[in-house]
Image 1 (cartoon, rainbow, N blue to C red):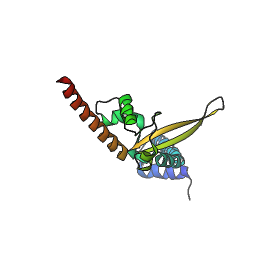
Image 2 (cartoon, rainbow, N blue to C red):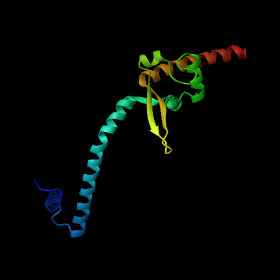
Image 3 (cartoon, rainbow, N blue to C red):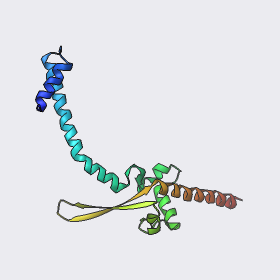
Image 4 (tube, one colour):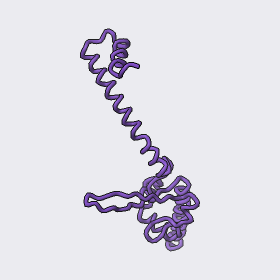
Length: 155
């Protein structure tokens, strides 16, 4: 089997027979860069797959982003307060076990080492699509109740 340089030269001479030497050199450089990038992609693919598995893939978002994603005119702090009052989140804004078990949330623990050598754990709460819909329903009910209370209080 020919080495990469020979393959590149064959490719360039076959598909760019009329190109000047500078153009051929440029294409040779591009082919080398592409080969390096493909090797890097191959190397990083297992990490990417692991992260997708860890985070639940593309169907999960970080809990702190739900206000932006739901776009219901309710801020993150208020959403957390409502979810705590509804028993969905604990006092430290972690989901109750039942909501993890039924597929609304997932807790991801990640370790990292600080420059001083100490190890720390970061806990990230992810919300699945099913959990987003559940939260949307809770917030819709909450908004409906708020409108009723405003009407009663306004009379």
